[in-house]
Image (cartoon, rainbow, N blue to C red; front, side, top):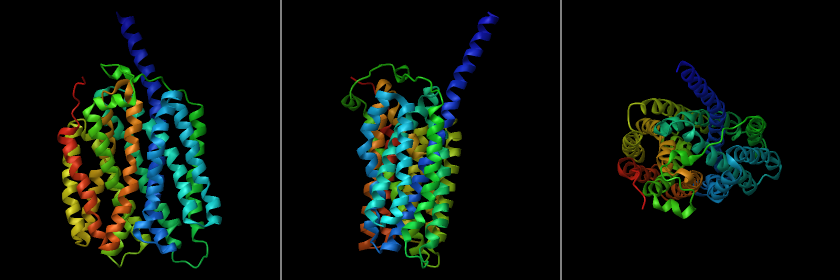
Length: 414
């Protein structure tokens, strides 16, 4: 009996170690795409300044990146199904690095359109990473704690969101008003740094052994199925819509944070507003870590609904344009947005079994919401004012309240 018990303990230690190292490496990916996304919010304002374009047109910066998610999502899911998580991640990292290094010739070509191409290639790589990393985090342990585990991984995503605006404000926006003729050159260094980091991570992944994950073990139905079989799961369909609206809200808020701050408080420069945006992501990261801890005591769906209600109220203050009070409301929004993406994702793919990779690719596809919202918000700002544009995320958070209260429920399939 003692020998059997010892053997079981040793076997459990081996399993834990086999999961731990890949989990740590996959968690590092969350930082990499957080950095890429947050740099966009600096580029959005940068192009308004150097090219004299409208807010609506600057929204194409987000459209290029998030549109890549829409186009690449299903191919990414097929890549994961055919070649597995590890090869899919390596492929995504290589695409990410290529897109980043293309900013070097972009500095010489000096066109808005070529920069969008670079961002689109980065997006294709990020799609592969997110399609793999999000479900991978959820299945590396008991399914009862999948939401908590994914929120923990996503917490490190917040670190990337913090560093992106800080580095972008220092290296990009600080030179916007300077005398140099090539304003595109200021974008080169940040992307060379991130491209090098991504390439090193890709090399590291090539030498790490990944455990084989069978999603069917997490589902009573064990159904491999087809894409259309996902329609049998009401909670998944609601998650697709909810994630679309969440990413739309988050991207819209990020994209025009600098615009909102500089218009609400004219004494604040673009560079300082970028640093304030980094502070917003500090609240975002704190929310991620604290949210992961709180889910040990509270149900994830209840926290999601509560945080969404708070954000609806916060957006009311933002739309009213009440100076520092509205900016504080924006910071509160960042704290509450922190748990939304991973919680919606984990609730959406729960009990999909063999359909997990396919379901993951569909939910990742909904990130295209980030391509649409900035253009729409920019149009409202151009015809009215920036504050009124924030009514769009207000509506999005309203639907998230519904998903957290009812739409998340897993129902038996016929």
